[in-house]
Length: 375
Image 1 (tube, rainbow, N blue to C red):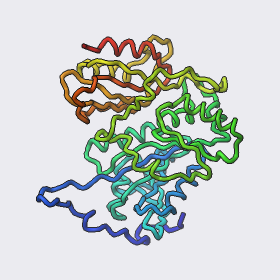
Image 2 (image 1 turned 90 degrees about the vertical axis):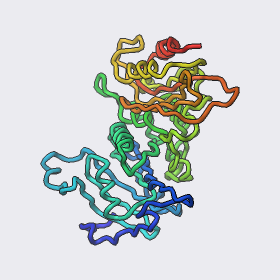
Image 3 (image 1 turned 60 degrees about the vertical axis):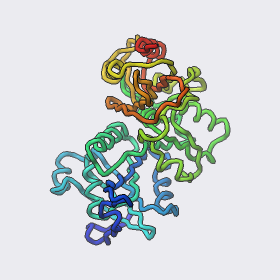
């Protein structure tokens, strides 16, 4: 980090005409400015997040990336009242690199701070937002997703979690007060991509045990093993995890019943798991939305005595009377359903659903959904 105290001392990034103005295509139609993708980067203390950030900043990727070291929620109310400016943002310690990337610290509680950052420093191609090691990334992820729907210039691309191959299971095993969820387990459960880092420091058996533990929590995320957090950036940037226009978000290879979790330490919270199933037939949209709201908003459902909670959910839904697939995405209490690609002429109508959460009764969940299906 630089010790520059004022953003006025850092030369502005110059936006190109294409970035500054709305472009028109060859037909004369006006095309809206594309949104800037945001990757949320999380991981427990010492996992290798900072190493990954440095790699992103120095790798030749032909992108102008703003790496934001975020401190959402840090500090007292008094400190915030003294430091937050009139626009609700505070930028500290600018560091601009030769390849056009920018690294800075932002203290704020919302998307507005980063939009203000773009106004002050020019438009970026990409934003990588690092959360603190003990942070729950769920509210941050939900916040960016909601602001996208409200017309924000930012587009959430995905959530990447870095796990320490050597100490990751130890962090997952830390016992919390009754009813509290282990932070490391939560970060894994919410991820779209998981990097199991520092594999050079463990034996093959230790690595296999860590991978089993991670996969036991989140069977939907793509998992990569890394040394010093070095990875082909195409695996973690521009992954379009929340882009409804892309291919169906539910991988058909994981809709088969998942095997019982094995290889866990007895202390890892095995109540957090992935549940996936496939049901042929069609469903009424109103009925499936009511069912989904019950799963996301109600407590104690699914035939279990302990409170069940959903952290992530995805589905490819066959809506009755519709010629197109409908994709559902959910993050905690928030969800959205959008029409996507058309069905093929002979393509069967099949619903594919995936839930990641705590105390989920897989049989009860699937049985309740089957009641919605119509021939």
